[in-house]
Image (cartoon, rainbow over all chains, first blue to last red; front, top):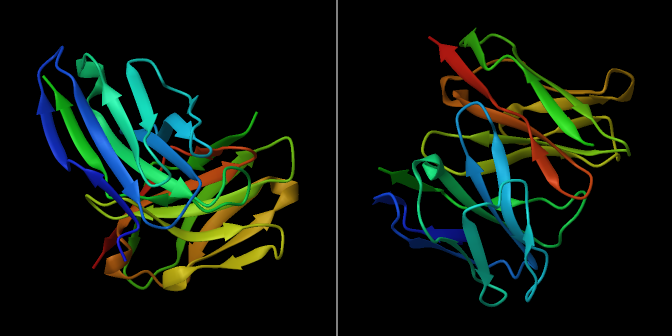
Length: 114
Length: 110
């Protein structure tokens, strides 16, 4: 029972390099999310996709792009990594977007930008 | 706008003692409220959620939380702490999107 799977788990990048975080869910959920977690700040929403074919900015979208490849997959791309993007990234999904829907999280991706 | 305040970034209790993690929320509409737990190097796992069906919500691992509208609070409790409860706990409120508090790290002393 995989749930939400994200790769890679750990990555070190040099400033200016690009990379893509991959995420897939097997729960047939419509909505998917990317969060970042920084100490003392909880989780902040970067981008979300309410349904296949749509994406929207969250609280902290600058420096990121996303692609909802199909219903299962939602990727996050850093075009030109900066040290401020050093963080733990979580992909998540829910049956639908909105109040009361439980969001299920992946295991996280630890990204360091040097 | 919705927001969440978790009082105390670190809480330390002895094994067997009461666990109380505090959460206050702000919401312009009747909220949905959640508690998540995060064990080291893992993702977030849902402990419990409030959806207006009952003010006292029971979750996994012996945790429960009580919704108090007059106090805009949703504090998390467990009667007797276990070593395995050591983790970071996040309160979250949802109107149309989920907003998290800053988290409380629970330490359990033997």
